[in-house]
Amino acid sequence: MGFFFFASRAAARFLGEARITHPSVSTAALLVAAASGGGLVAYADSAGENASSEPSQEAPRKKKVVVLGTGWAGTSFLKDLDCSKYEVKVISPRNYFAFTPLLPSVTCGTVEARSIVEPIRKMLEKKRKDVTFYEAECFKIDASKKAVHCRSAVGTNFDGNGDFMVDYDYLVVALGATVNTFNTPGVMENCYFLKEVEDAQKIRRNVIDCFEKASLPNISEEEKRKILHFVIIGGGPTGVEFAAEMHDFLVEDLVKLYPAIQDFVKITIIQSGEHILNMFDQRIATFAEIKFQRDGIEVNTGFRVVKVSDDLITMKSKSLGEVSVPYGMAVWSAGVGTRPVIMDFMQQIGQTNRRVLATNEWLRVHECDSIYAIGDCASITQRKIMDDISTVFKMADKDNSGTLTLKEINDVIEDICIRYPQVELYMKSMHMLDIRDLIKDAIGDSHKESMVVDIEEFKKALSHVDSQVKSVPATAQVAFISICKRSLARVNILRFLKLCQVAAQQGHYLAECFNKMDQCKEHPEGPLRMTGTGSGRHNFRPFRYKHLGQFAPLGGEQAAAELPGDWVSMGHSTQWLWYSVYASKQVSWRTRMLVVSDWTRRFIFGRDSSRI
Image 1 (cartoon, one colour):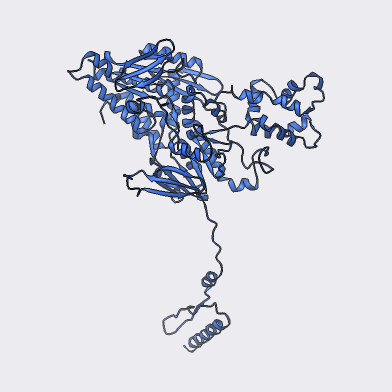
Image 2 (cartoon, helix red, strand yellow; image 1 turned 180 degrees about the vertical axis):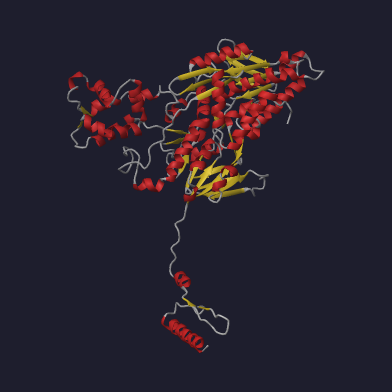
């Protein structure tokens, strides 16, 4: 006992001295006394309090990444992004991702609507601690203040209480596109569209309404023909697939349920071009037209719709002039347009007279360092090599001799092909093995042995490269899609190609760039900088689109496909390939199982014709 008491006195004395000589020592030092007849003294130095008195080393703030949209591009970006590196906020008016290529199947009950949607929160379940989702609509992008203005998509906002603002360090715009009516009178009021899941559900209900209405006893035969006339405006992949689905629904299911009116049903496609599916190989377009003619689907090519009333569609052709046809239901699939928020943003940054945002090859919006745009709301503007030819020549001429040797050109040709992909595409189209063949055409026979070129000969060698870009198919490189946007007849090409291929690849590419942003700042992996300020290399390689093929289901368990390598396939076997590809492309095993089960149910029991 005496020993313990002595130890207690000594500890107390030590604490007092320590407080005098070291004021940072707290008087709340820990004294723990043990029971059982004595007091065991324990003293713990207050290290935690000492640390708090010094300037704390706070962890660096995470950069804020705001993603607008949950379509193909936005979802692909979020799935591949390492969200632990950023503070991520997602803003979208819909809290789900929809597999839009199967929307035509939803219109006729081949696939149920809930089978092709996946909740965003479910998709991001593993990242929910690092991702915040707001079900809201962005109505303004303020690039100067680095903020987006949003409005809640839940409930009404007449009083403005649903408005809020979100700031960002990086903004990823993936808002997609909207319907483009080309200001045709009556389209918005009288036509159905096929852009969203809700659109497909409306079409499905209206199809059944048409059949039920035509079955009433007080309807004349003329009225029945009008009510059961289904018109599809636009002969692109969406319109053709809907026409095929509608025909299958009719011959496989509805004729059994409505035998009295089956002879009054008519399906018509109106196409402004000379052929439907004019973005596909000509063999596919011809095969589709012959099959539709055999199936009784009327295809009117060379007609442009000029007006839509509640019961008449007025179309115009060069040979026949204006023609009006009665209809029961019209589906507009003639093109896509720009969302108002994107149009407003383009005016802010000086991109007027454009349909979509212009980005560089790294998907960054021009004149906006921290804003990226992917998917249908943007297009890549590929720089022309002739605009930078002097800079490229000077960079390659390391000895400043005023000429380039073959070795000097070979030293930079890889960077040139990465920065200007049209060079490589041009050489392939002209069956050139390497840069030597390209130079030979420019310098002629007299310089074949020396292979030394000056600036004028170098310009001549590359003078045809940029002009060749215009004839390159849009499927070869997404950068060239912006060239095709000048043609309204090709607007469906862009929608179909960018729907799931380009948008998804852009999202994946941009996520990879964000994931290794810090690493690539120290160790750049891109090509040499040939334009603009700065020297060295770009941080990342430019985006390159890889074409994986495109499908066109034609009904009757037949489909057409245009696959890489100029491979064209048509018929029943292609339909099974279509089933396999679309099932594998589902975003989760849940939707994959639901879609496959819907197809199986349809094979066994047919389509459901209930109006729900």
